[in-house]
Structures are given as structure tokens and as C-alpha cells.
Image (cartoon, rainbow, N blue to C red; front, top):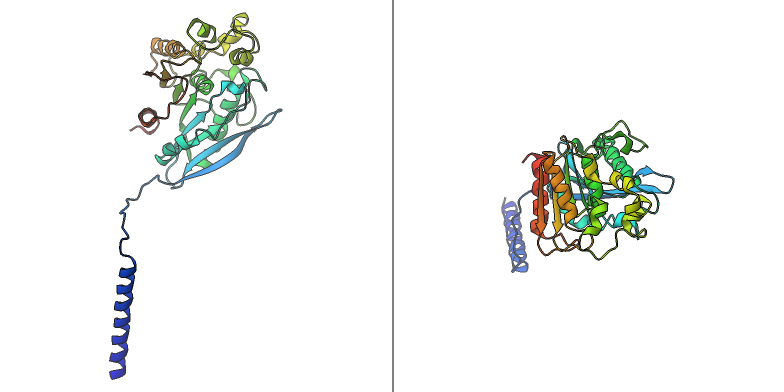
Length: 311
């Protein structure tokens, strides 16, 4: 009996000494209390081939919230760069700015298209529509709600985003390839300083000769703009506006010397005339790009939340 009591006493004393030593060794260590977030983990799946063309395979990168839930809305981002005039799209470049959208519950895809040297318009529109159809066809794999898809692009990517918004259901602009049974329509569009009516670009202050046969715009359509007006009209998102187009958010810097500010005004006015829900922001003092300020990204987030999340 005495041995048992002594053994218990030794165990208790040992625990007290250990606890005291542990406390002494952790002097100065601070604690942060955390709250569990539903969407605080993001997984990147890169270089997914969504289509194979005669020239090359086309890739996309997907940001997936790690937490499982009901299917999530999708945001598709189209990186600009003169339709690949000087180099293919840098599809990873805007990923850091897209991560917070995935943390807030969206599946986000950054997609590639063929350059204007690899194919003239509407090759690029065919490609981005093919990406939309691929993502719808694989909605179960990526936990996507195929009825809630928004598109967002900057510069030439904004041009293609606007075209996705206004050409839903235009059969001759669907292209070919796989998953043709899936729709390429989108439910919301964010256009950051995208060109619209290429014939009007030279009428406004700029650092570029848009009408030159060597301009990015002329290379896109396959000839000097003013000599190919029918081709230019086909590449203009305003051409296809109908009353059932999705809501638009347009943003453009008033000091843009690459894509004149008026290009967005033309689209805004045409959408308003057709009674499409559209909001346009003039970013005072901004040039071509540099739109990563928190208040601008917050406005984009609120737009998608309203039209894809219903909140």
C-alpha cells in the first residue's frame, strides 16, 4: 500500500516538474485565436489541356477551393496582351489577384487562346468558347455550377470577354471541337479596358497607329482596319448585342493611351440602349492596366457576388 502511494506521489511530482519546465521554456510565446473559414484553402491545378488544335494544345489553370461543398460558381479570366501579338498570353501572371476570389467560394480558371499569328479572328473567340464548354462538360470533376459562369478579361481579354457576353447563341461564332452539346453562354461579364469598335480607335488620342496594317488590331483581323470594315464589324461585340445578354461591369482608365477610353463608352452606350444591365467605372488618372487596387478588385467581387452568388 505504501509503495502504491509513493508511486502515485512520484508520478504527480514528475508531471508538475514537467509542466513547470514547459511553461518556463515557452515564456514570451504568444497565441492567435483563429476562426474557421469555409473557403480559406485554395488548390491550383495547372496546365490542363482543354482543347487540341492543329497548331498546339490549349491550356487552362484552375483555382479550386479545397473545402467540399455544393457546386460553386465559376469565374473565367482571359489575360490580355494584344491577342498574343508579340507573345502568347501570360496566363499565370494574374493568378495572385485571382486567389482571393477562390478563397471567397469561386472556382476560377485562367485560360489560353491561340495568338493572332496562329489564327485570325474569330479563332480566339472559338478558343475561349471551347474553354467554357470544356469547363461545363467537366463541372462535376471541378465542382462547378454550370449555370453560374462569369467571364472577366483585360485589354484584348476584355474584348473577348465582351464578345462572350454578346455572342451567346450566335451559331456561326461557336467554332467546332469537342463538347458542342454544352453551351458557351455566360451569366456575367467584367470587361477591363477592352477594345470594341476597332474602326473608331484612331479617332481618339493614343500612342499607336491602329489603322496601320502592322498594328495588333489589323493583324487580328488579317488586314488594315479601314480596308476591311466587314471583318472589323464581325470582331465588334456591339454588333451582336441583344436584349437577353448578361449583365456587364466595364472599367477603363481615363488616361489610357493604348485602348482609348471611348471604346468602353461605345459599348456602355450600346448596352444601355438595349436595356442590358450595365455599370461602367472611369478609373481617374489610370492608364492601360494597373487595376489591382483593393477597391477595384472589391468592386469586381461585389459584381460577381450579386450576379453569380445572389448576395
